[in-house]
Image (cartoon, rainbow, N blue to C red; front, side, top):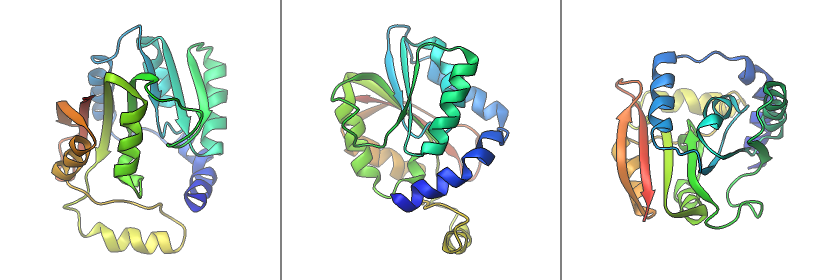
Length: 207
């Protein structure tokens, strides 16, 4: 955890300046996410980075907690929220499990481009289930690299010299299997973008 936090802290300034690589896919993800949010909802985004997505979704909910375990990311995100004058976003440095985040506290939990970076995905999914209200939604989009076997040695070499984070390789089917095993029912799925190594968008309801 410490090594990963240091990696993302060091990357935070450059990350905040990076453009969206595929804007149509990003906009499709936002559109489908908004379709499942309500103005009365309290939602948590885990791995929010510098809160760019939080700023675009906050007007669709009552309260939005934008959390990340990287202090550098959170500080940049907090400054962006203050500059934008958005009053319903709380920036929180946290990683599940965290005592700052109570059981059954949220109508929705969001995770974008995060799940493939988690060393213990089942544990995080169990925590997401715990902090969602009954019937609450877990909305995620994750690069599914399970069939991109050729990337494993490249990423491994980059990790060895501190140029890449931990990356988990799973297929869309394996990802959805992990989500349902954690006590969720999948109610929507899609690939944004649709490629050989897709980014799978999943909306799952807590049972």
